[in-house]
Image (cartoon, rainbow, N blue to C red; front, side):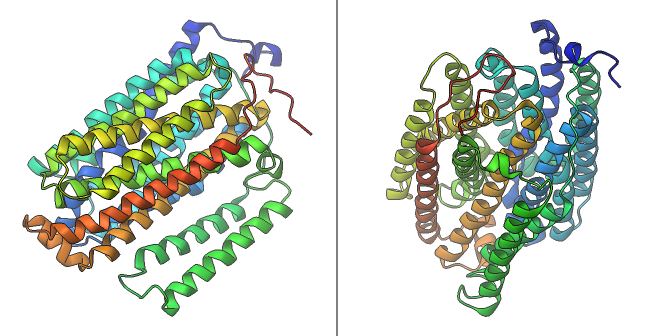
Length: 492
């Protein structure tokens, strides 16, 4: 318990003190960021060993789903107890899930392990963003963007290369075993660093029922997207039943939000114009990024004819582009009045690059595909810091963790839905049975033309998703960024 007075507890820290805390948080962020990039290039090899291509989307989706459900709860727990104990619990669960994944004898075990891993991993980025929101005023965050650039550039470059190398030359389980020493280091460094964090404890209640309704609604939707066109026809009774169930559960979740004394997503936050528009802008941008990062290795290996290691290298422009875009936007937005222009230009550029790939999904040189992915990544990257900082700038300090949790909840939900959706397009539009596609891919004789045609529609869907993000970003109110922690007055 912090013995200092409230005034002292909330007194600004010196730059040197903030740097110590940020460094500790960076290590925890690196753990989650690396996990998101290292697995993509190993997925085809994992599917090969287990003989299950259809289950691959659930390796990603299970992580995103549990991370989605836990994110707003983590935000509230951080508001109640402070971020340090919550971060320690998240790291512990992440490591338990990593060990389960590394020991997995089959696809179902791996999916369960990823679900456990997601419970911990879902809180790492959200907690890091909450901690930065508590420490640093929105206008001053650009000063610290360089630290986070190091984390994401390192993970964006090392992740795909390590994933491809482990899968092709060693064993895919190493992508999970590597988390154990990294997690122990992250726990030790962040625990010591966060002792310096001023106390920000606020009374909240946890809405477990709301989280359960949201999670169940998402599962029903993802099952429909995964099974439609493969296990069942799209207009079959099971698929229509799942979609109906999802709608009913979402309605139940909406009623819960409207009637609970303290719902998972408070009405006061959802009613905020910046939150209401910034959240879909972030969700569709992040969903597109996650979906592309998971499906692009299949495109690079099945259509472009690259090996797992080569596809890891070819995926770097997309991931590194996101870092460049996010870092640049984060640094610039604190010094300009019209910070929304950055993501508006970025989204238009990303849509143009994806449109080019949709027009010519087959026959483009690898370097051109890499350039298009780089432009897409830079454009996507500009959305993420602008939407997050704008939302944090618009809410009171006691709701910082909750608001950040809402942002990350919908970003994770967007990633889960669009990953499943892109996967359904690949399987459904290629006209090839999932097992046959996997076998041909492994033997280097995949039917390139049908697969390329399927990815044409993946790129179309990705561009359409970014169009939604663009519309939401245009609608988002552009409030001046405050230079202190007191929130700007909210309009009536």
